Amino acid sequence: MQGDKRDNRGWSYLGTLIILLILWKGLSVLIAHPALPSPEVVLASLINSAHELSRHAAVSLLRVVYALLLAFSLAFPAGILSREDTVDRLISPLIYLLYPIPHIVLLPLYILLFGIGDFSRVALIATILFFQIAVTTRDAARQVSEYYIYSIKSLGASKLDVYRYVIIPAAMPKIITALRISVGTAVAVLFFAESFATNTGLGYVILDSWSRADYEIMYAAIAAMALLGFSLYIILEIAERRICRWM
Amino acid sequence: MISVRNVSKSYGDVRALEDVSLEVERGESCAIIGPSGCGKSTLLLIISGLLQPSSGEVYIENKIVGGPVKNAALILQDYGLFPWKTVYDNVALGLRIRGVERDVEREKVEGLLEKFGLKRFDRYYPKHLSGGMRQRVAIARALAVEPEILLMDEPLSSLDALSREKMQNFLLNLWKETKTTMILVTHSIEEAVFLGKKIVVLTPRPGRVKAIVNNPKVGKEDYRQEEVYFEKCREIREIIEVGAT
Image 1: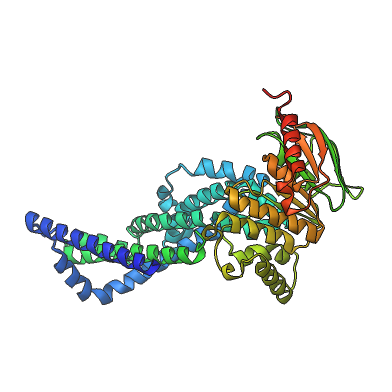
Image 2: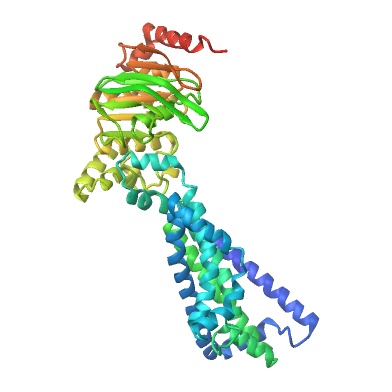
């Protein structure tokens, strides 16, 4: 039964993809401008430049993954422990004051502080993700019903048990949703972070080929970036299905 | 013996319980009945030591209750089971928290699942079970830690009438078999009379003790068909209706 459902979803994804490709093809024929090459041209250039692109894609992928890991490893404990009022009083004002600031403007500052290496870029992405994940995790942890806590405490649970058996698993679906949303943000910020003072990464390739009016490479890199985001999204969905089997 | 002495509880300006006193003997069953929002659940949480009363004390075997009571198990209506744990893991949870060895745990949990007719469902998640089965899992989990006191908050209110009677019989037999002290919160007169050797009637908010009725004939499945049973139900209904508008 479940297998059927998944197959159907696979087919509907494929159908949507085909419709999008047809629309793209139609537009490129209508506009007939080198700035919008047709999909098969982009596919060919994606294959031709695969070797070159894969090097950049690997760099981009690592940057995103490191940023996700860094952001998660800080935001998860901060968000979960915000269930404790003492921790919340400390962290919440900090998050709410700093969250609305457009963190993307920090790139120049990070480059001044950390240099033009990868760390500045990872740190920028991680800063933005931190807030997204921390805010969601905090709310999820604080929404866990008091009655679940009563239930486990009546079994003799210590504070650690309460977190381990109740708060973390109860908050998990929302945390994974936050991660999935973060992947989209991460790739968007990645593009910006790679647009400046670097000569690696897909973002760099897009801007470089754009300035050289090499639209085929540009589209190939855009497609590669989309695939990067898509694969991370799929990985998280699989993780969600495994971790939140009970949903 | 459980002894509740002059317990009051307020949440801010809202008074939930006022000057409640009652006693439950060791091995006795006690049903607490009252309208919705009369603080029945609050009273149960206070007896279990999970909530502190605003004033008054609870004593168990002459010792004052100051924190979660070790030998008591609490069964809550909707939040009893953890939806992220399988039937097996839910039942095993109390043992795991207590650091019981894995093979002892398995033997015990499997025994309980067998006894409660849940053996086939040990890998299921609660959402795949019927209401009655979920309730049995919740009771199995409470019993796994071998409590001396069983505290139940409207454990059967989400069941339909037929499974409800079946579960009432189940609870009755369980009580006779295990000889635990049982305190059951309910809003059903029939359930209170069928299961409670002592019936405590609370007033609407703030909950005060309106009457404590003894119900000595409790203990047999066919009590439901007896004249005394209907008498008792009528008696309780009259007590509840006095002064109520």
